[in-house]
Image (cartoon, rainbow, N blue to C red; front, side, top):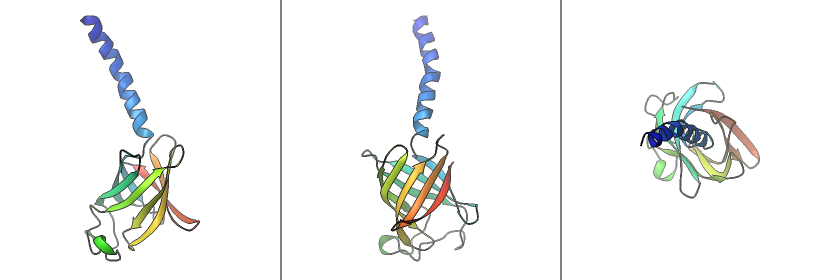
Length: 147
Protein backbone atom coordinates (compact mmCIF):
# COMPACT_ATOMS: atom_id res chain seq x y z
CA UNK A 1 0.00 0.00 0.00
CA UNK A 2 2.80 2.43 0.89
CA UNK A 3 4.65 1.64 -2.31
CA UNK A 4 1.54 2.39 -4.37
CA UNK A 5 1.04 5.70 -2.56
CA UNK A 6 4.69 6.71 -3.18
CA UNK A 7 4.37 5.78 -6.84
CA UNK A 8 1.24 7.92 -7.17
CA UNK A 9 2.97 10.87 -5.48
CA UNK A 10 5.89 10.58 -7.89
CA UNK A 11 3.63 10.24 -10.92
CA UNK A 12 1.45 13.26 -10.08
CA UNK A 13 4.00 15.95 -11.08
CA UNK A 14 4.69 14.12 -14.35
CA UNK A 15 0.99 14.00 -15.17
CA UNK A 16 0.56 17.70 -14.38
CA UNK A 17 3.56 18.58 -16.55
CA UNK A 18 2.15 16.53 -19.43
CA UNK A 19 -1.23 18.24 -19.14
CA UNK A 20 0.28 21.73 -19.12
CA UNK A 21 2.49 20.90 -22.12
CA UNK A 22 -0.54 19.58 -23.97
CA UNK A 23 -2.54 22.73 -23.17
CA UNK A 24 0.19 24.95 -24.60
CA UNK A 25 -0.03 23.02 -27.91
CA UNK A 26 -3.62 24.14 -28.38
CA UNK A 27 -5.08 27.62 -28.71
CA UNK A 28 -8.06 26.54 -26.59
CA UNK A 29 -8.42 28.86 -23.61
CA UNK A 30 -8.77 32.54 -22.75
CA UNK A 31 -6.95 35.20 -24.79
CA UNK A 32 -6.42 38.94 -24.45
CA UNK A 33 -7.03 40.55 -27.82
CA UNK A 34 -4.51 43.29 -28.51
CA UNK A 35 -5.35 46.19 -30.81
CA UNK A 36 -2.70 46.11 -33.54
CA UNK A 37 -2.83 49.92 -33.88
CA UNK A 38 -2.76 51.02 -30.21
CA UNK A 39 -1.23 47.98 -28.50
CA UNK A 40 -3.98 48.07 -25.83
CA UNK A 41 -5.99 45.09 -24.61
CA UNK A 42 -9.47 45.31 -26.14
CA UNK A 43 -11.25 42.18 -25.00
CA UNK A 44 -11.04 38.66 -23.61
CA UNK A 45 -11.94 35.90 -26.06
CA UNK A 46 -12.36 32.24 -25.16
CA UNK A 47 -11.36 29.79 -27.87
CA UNK A 48 -12.86 26.32 -27.71
CA UNK A 49 -12.05 23.23 -29.74
CA UNK A 50 -14.81 20.94 -31.01
CA UNK A 51 -14.48 17.15 -31.21
CA UNK A 52 -13.64 17.42 -34.93
CA UNK A 53 -10.68 19.70 -34.14
CA UNK A 54 -12.27 22.94 -35.40
CA UNK A 55 -11.95 26.09 -33.32
CA UNK A 56 -14.39 28.84 -32.40
CA UNK A 57 -14.04 31.93 -30.25
CA UNK A 58 -16.50 33.92 -28.14
CA UNK A 59 -16.07 37.35 -26.53
CA UNK A 60 -16.16 36.93 -22.75
CA UNK A 61 -15.53 40.57 -21.88
CA UNK A 62 -15.07 43.90 -23.67
CA UNK A 63 -12.37 45.94 -21.92
CA UNK A 64 -12.06 48.84 -24.35
CA UNK A 65 -14.36 50.03 -27.12
CA UNK A 66 -14.92 53.17 -29.16
CA UNK A 67 -18.66 52.45 -28.79
CA UNK A 68 -18.85 52.77 -25.00
CA UNK A 69 -18.86 50.26 -22.13
CA UNK A 70 -21.52 47.92 -23.62
CA UNK A 71 -20.94 47.94 -27.39
CA UNK A 72 -23.33 46.36 -29.84
CA UNK A 73 -22.55 45.17 -33.35
CA UNK A 74 -24.58 47.76 -35.25
CA UNK A 75 -22.69 47.01 -38.49
CA UNK A 76 -23.46 43.28 -38.31
CA UNK A 77 -26.00 41.56 -40.50
CA UNK A 78 -28.38 38.74 -39.67
CA UNK A 79 -28.66 37.31 -36.16
CA UNK A 80 -25.82 39.50 -34.77
CA UNK A 81 -27.34 42.83 -35.89
CA UNK A 82 -27.48 45.22 -32.90
CA UNK A 83 -26.57 42.40 -30.49
CA UNK A 84 -24.10 42.95 -27.61
CA UNK A 85 -20.50 42.16 -28.52
CA UNK A 86 -20.04 40.53 -25.10
CA UNK A 87 -21.08 36.89 -25.55
CA UNK A 88 -20.84 37.03 -29.35
CA UNK A 89 -19.04 34.32 -31.34
CA UNK A 90 -16.49 36.19 -33.47
CA UNK A 91 -14.33 33.30 -34.68
CA UNK A 92 -15.56 30.02 -36.16
CA UNK A 93 -14.78 26.98 -38.32
CA UNK A 94 -10.98 27.14 -38.13
CA UNK A 95 -9.53 23.72 -38.93
CA UNK A 96 -6.05 22.31 -38.32
CA UNK A 97 -3.66 23.29 -41.13
CA UNK A 98 -0.27 21.94 -40.08
CA UNK A 99 1.66 22.08 -36.83
CA UNK A 100 0.29 24.86 -34.60
CA UNK A 101 -1.70 26.36 -37.49
CA UNK A 102 -5.41 26.63 -38.20
CA UNK A 103 -7.12 28.04 -41.30
CA UNK A 104 -10.28 27.99 -43.38
CA UNK A 105 -12.43 29.74 -40.81
CA UNK A 106 -13.98 33.14 -40.50
CA UNK A 107 -13.59 36.06 -38.10
CA UNK A 108 -16.01 38.88 -37.39
CA UNK A 109 -14.77 42.39 -36.64
CA UNK A 110 -17.51 43.59 -34.27
CA UNK A 111 -16.40 47.21 -34.66
CA UNK A 112 -17.39 47.19 -38.34
CA UNK A 113 -19.59 44.10 -38.70
CA UNK A 114 -17.36 42.77 -41.48
CA UNK A 115 -16.54 39.07 -41.75
CA UNK A 116 -13.13 37.97 -43.07
CA UNK A 117 -11.45 34.68 -43.89
CA UNK A 118 -9.31 33.72 -40.92
CA UNK A 119 -6.21 31.81 -40.01
CA UNK A 120 -4.13 31.56 -36.86
CA UNK A 121 -0.79 30.29 -35.66
CA UNK A 122 0.17 29.41 -32.10
CA UNK A 123 3.66 30.67 -31.33
CA UNK A 124 6.29 28.48 -29.59
CA UNK A 125 5.62 28.31 -25.87
CA UNK A 126 1.86 28.57 -26.42
CA UNK A 127 1.39 32.04 -24.90
CA UNK A 128 1.02 34.07 -28.11
CA UNK A 129 -1.44 33.52 -30.93
CA UNK A 130 -1.22 35.29 -34.29
CA UNK A 131 -4.77 35.77 -35.57
CA UNK A 132 -5.32 37.03 -39.12
CA UNK A 133 -8.34 38.29 -40.99
CA UNK A 134 -7.89 38.18 -44.77
CA UNK A 135 -9.42 39.52 -47.97
CA UNK A 136 -7.97 37.55 -50.88
CA UNK A 137 -4.22 37.38 -50.12
CA UNK A 138 -4.06 40.58 -48.02
CA UNK A 139 -4.18 39.85 -44.29
CA UNK A 140 -4.21 41.95 -41.13
CA UNK A 141 -2.74 40.14 -38.13
CA UNK A 142 -3.11 40.69 -34.40
CA UNK A 143 -1.09 38.91 -31.73
CA UNK A 144 -3.25 37.76 -28.85
CA UNK A 145 -1.77 36.95 -25.42
CA UNK A 146 -2.91 33.96 -23.34
CA UNK A 147 -4.85 35.16 -20.31
